[in-house]
Length: 174
Image 1 (cartoon, rainbow, N blue to C red):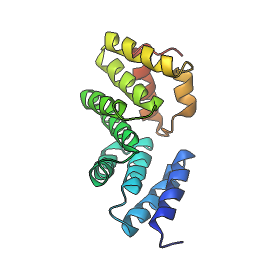
Image 2 (spheres, rainbow, N blue to C red):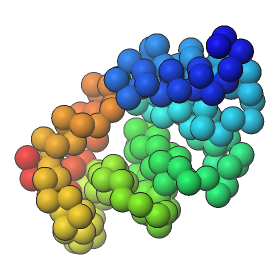
Image 3 (cartoon, one colour):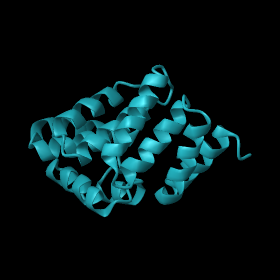
Image 4 (cartoon, rainbow, N blue to C red):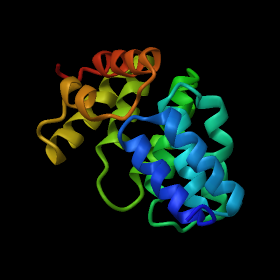
């Protein structure tokens, strides 16, 4: 249905889950055009932008998702994508703050730990990183650089290399 914001949002999210961010972004923009207060569409657009090297543009949409649905069951995802955006803009302290907020949300999401580890690695906070790494490995024993490389949705090569570099600096095993 061309007039259904939910359908466009779902299609956009399917595209970004397949790392097809160039296809995801127009669908998510259309979902927002059809329903400007659709928090999940704002989140999806923000995520697709973060994953495709457009972190500064993503912040507006991630802020909107958080503001429009402050008790959303997906809040942990909203917050971790904001942490990613700050990491890619080299705002490491902000990335740490957003990642910690994401970790306070219910349910396990390994990427909340990963962005925190990457930011801590870039900040040279090795002791803190060791503690976070022990926690995520306890919850997900296969957590490693290889796992992140194979499963994360980041498509921008420069951002992904920077992300992985931070994980290495944090002591995450290959």
